[in-house]
Length: 295
Image (cartoon, rainbow, N blue to C red; front, side, top):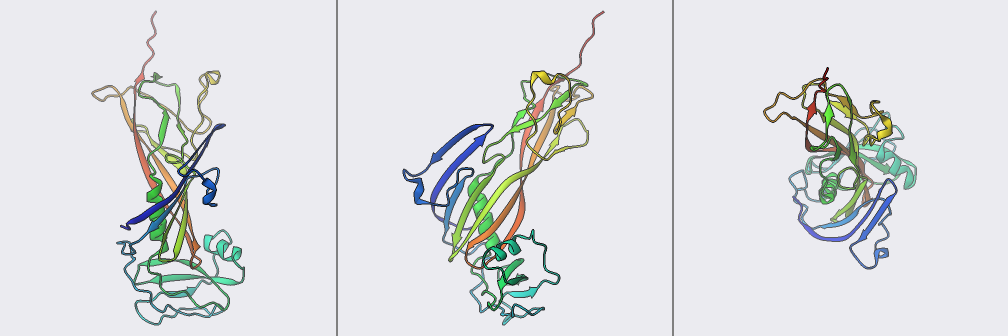
């Protein structure tokens, strides 16, 4: 685990249904031009490249493929091997996007670094030598940046533990959106002259309702129920309980699991980018009653 030498800047900006709240860690937020108005930005200085994910290796001389050749090369077993991808990745690939943005002409290569465990895709401009094996895997820095975000499980607004719900009636599920429970959230980590910025946002929430039914997967935060909606089902995130709970406390015990999609890119150092997912979970309980008809 990398040791953080300093957390230089924290800027928080939150916008939820028209409510905007901004907090700054310093009196002069302009001191860090990266701070935006719609995300958390944490700049982290990491001092120890010895990470268990694969950051042990030395600098190495690196492979030096010409930008117009396919195949791979390497000067030693400890260096990175670069293989030009044929066909090239689609334009949506993050490494391709970053390469085009930084100069355009070049190609995407698969990189494999035995000394660090790195396997990914990098952009190498025409005429540029392949970069030497990095002291630290950029994806390791991306995970360090995510760790600094302090992401947690969904902030469940409904169902509520103190709510009243009825068998056979539509239940609406939704979550409150904050930078640490839903995103968007952004952070930057730096080590050995390489900086990586990671951006994270929840892309889906899987609701396990506790009644044995199939999980409900919602691709958004859900819609808040309004009394004017009556008994209509939720348009995008809902469930209907068909029975009361048989548990000892008479409640259903469920979980809401958020999948965070993290996109990262090297902002200082060799061109590289990638993505991965993280999951965070929150439990909930709900009481469901039957309507008794008296004649």
